[in-house]
Image 1 (cartoon, rainbow, N blue to C red):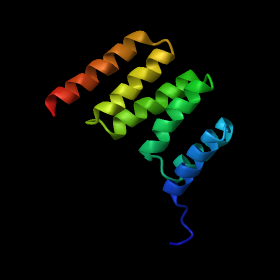
Image 2 (image 1 turned 135 degrees about the vertical axis):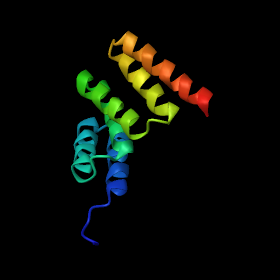
Image 3 (image 1 turned 45 degrees about the vertical axis):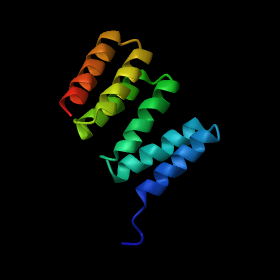
Image 4 (image 1 turned 135 degrees about the horizontal axis):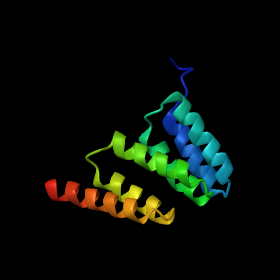
Length: 108
């Protein structure tokens, strides 16, 4: 199985591309990760941020929502969704996500 792509290395490569200013390249690399592992949470999380920066708001929100589906008990998942929604002008959804993050934190 040595010919199986290492999605974690690919993710790291995407972050390095972003750090070098190549947001398009980073997005392409993260999309490639998700072709291999559709549930790679870190890639969905990064895509939410990068796509929001590119103005691809609906897709950014969709990736942030996917993170909450993959990590439903992690308050950070909902905090990130809240931030992405806020930056995309979806204030009520942002407030709802932040409320959910607080509920999870209180339950832990």
